[in-house]
Length: 221
Image (cartoon, rainbow, N blue to C red; front, top):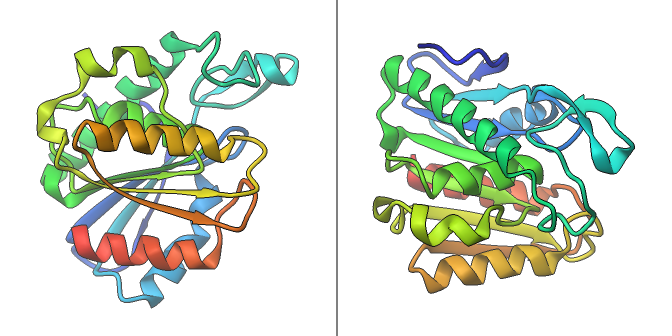
């Protein structure tokens, strides 16, 4: 069964040896992070397939019910109160199927990195720590840990050793840095191999961070 989700696919060369599934943030789409591929390529990344899925269009409560691309609904500025657990789990299942599609195309789980920014990063945490596959690594940018109360019961022990790059902006007023830091500390306490970076920026991605992402991808792929 193929996942029904639409994606933008970019390959940096023939016969890619690694695959990165990259999830955008609230209100963006799969094209949002396409420009980063060129930068990563210039930093010596091996031939890699990048898959940028588009989140479905749903009404988002915090934006007055306005319909936009979102991995799940956000009802509260607190992010973790009144959590849309159903929506989070639905996106988790959709992206799990997308990873199965990449495996069916010939990539081994240990050749696949799951990455995400903001809401996409929350789904990266949600799926990457629970999936039955041991992936090559996880990248969680400017994000937080959703469904925290079920993590102990659902964490797959094979994912405890997975390399994880987490990064956040000190001036982030959308997802407060404290949220990101809390997630990292919790995961480190469980034995997850987290590399944590903070940057003097808002809710965005900076050049220094892209260099770190390139280094991480070269290491795990």
